[in-house]
Image (cartoon, rainbow, N blue to C red; front, side, top):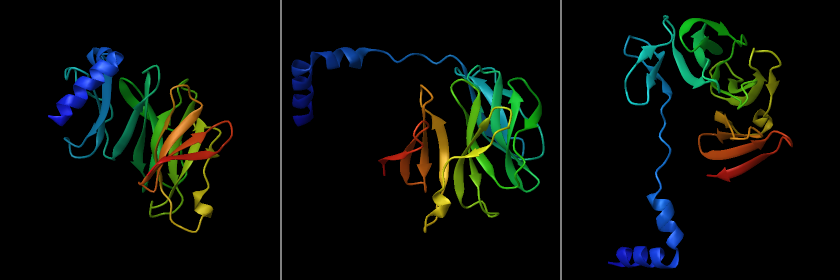
Length: 196
């Protein structure tokens, strides 16, 4: 009864709320890229948003993970297990032979294109066990690799994961130690903690 009373009062006091509540979200009609191990190891697939048109993008004997579309949907960036570590690769949206963008010998995971498609942000390990990661950025062709965070300099363990660009491309959001959420301002280089 209390919940119903609150809801009715909300509609009376804030009539615009009911208008927003009735609006429908935009319908996504593109393709979704995902990972499946249905063929024995993890590969990259794409499927239409209505569940039809599934197609396999990668086909090899190694693990492929963390796929993300380029803004124009012409390419997919992902991590591929090669010679004992994960490296960043790109492949065309129709498949084919991938191009390796990193060759660092440490795990490179969670890549994501910038909104203009010119940069890729990702996480790179700083130990052979793949336990500790920092945030890196490079050009979309693999050149100009730049380290962005230096949590390794702190006295406790660190893990930077799952980076992604803000809609206007001037910030990067990422998780820290799988507990905290941070935003990196690309202009100032400062990190702001959002939540824990």
